[in-house]
Image (tube, rainbow, N blue to C red; front, top):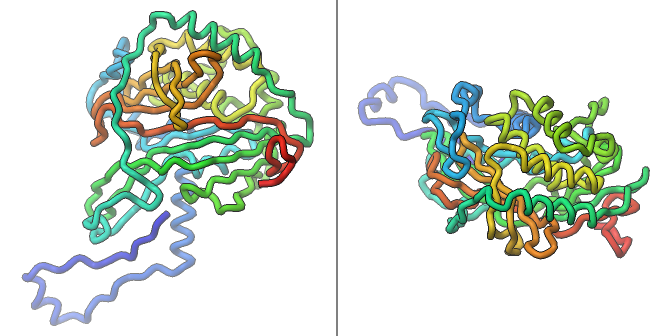
Length: 386
């Protein structure tokens, strides 16, 4: 979090006489310990929001459920529903899930009035790009999912053994909110595209993250081992060992997803879609489970095919997508148009909302490496360490 010193506002002229009767007030300065405590509190709030998958701006969100039958492309809903400020980038294991969320749930910068007047993006951020958005269709959805599911089975990676680590390397960029602490006015930017490296043990107890591009970690990275007792793994905090136990029947799997995520997110359907998306993005899954997850996703109302989109690396692909009826943004899972292998994910605003114009790309990822390695921080192929 960027700290900007608090500054007292200039007093209006009618306060001059009173000022002469009182000792001059000092500028309050928080101690270093207090600043550290407040910063840690904010980071905890960000982590907790990410752990809930689709973080609500406030509890009022559930008072404005999406209208049944709303258009999956326009996302039209009753007014008054706040949009989410961030979303989690990955689900990586029961013990390490919370720690990794600090860099994935979005970033918030609080500034004083004078800093806000100067304008400009927060450090490490840029204006979000606005693109011409292709409309989605349900035509050809079944056949596309069949091809994607078949490709997932063919791309099976080695089953990680105890002591080995799952390695995921990607390029990522997510929403950043810059807010003026005095006026409450906020502006929206996106992080500069930056690399992210994650190592995870199959049992979910050990992990490491390197993501210095947005300030989440130093160049050396950070441990993702949780403090205290490791929680039971679940869909919201999975490990590879846990995922191996899941059914590969798409109907039974989808039912389980709806049951375990009940009450989360902006709607049951959107939450189910997002849960599947998080599982396939930054994890290593048994091939048959990956195939079943894609087939389950095709059964969720509002899911469409987008015939042309691009991932964070600029690779064109075909996408399976769904628009959040409440926030109006569409999440696209992007696949190679020839091999149907997974490339990455894009989130694009489908309608104007909260100052964000339709067509604004508010999230972008590209998976560049997915492998099994023999040690923590080991890089695939070379045996060298990051």
